[in-house]
Length: 139
Image (tube, rainbow, N blue to C red; front, side, top):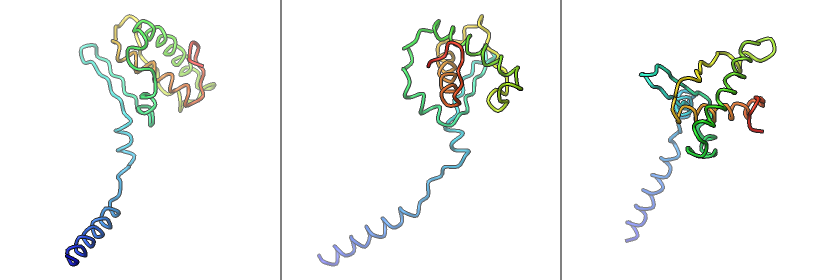
């Protein structure tokens, strides 16, 4: 009985030593893949990719889908996209690192709720994270 107890204790000690040797893989590729949100619709020929570390976890703390109506989100996105694109066109005033490419958002196209929800929340996140103030943005 004493030998069984010693063998069991030895096996437990050996097992617990082995689990400490495992390393967690947290490479930038893993992080980028995890923090990439992609929305695409081939029939409308659009794609949105949000590659921003921390956005997905931040999004989980925001009002849920359905909290805002689609027309509210579309109106906000029109304002935000317009402001963003204006800043892209002024590289001497606004950092090219933040405002690198224009966003092609056509207000006459129905992108659906999900696209508008994610785009709106990305703009709110962008303003919070980079201390930017857009006209009509949350304060």
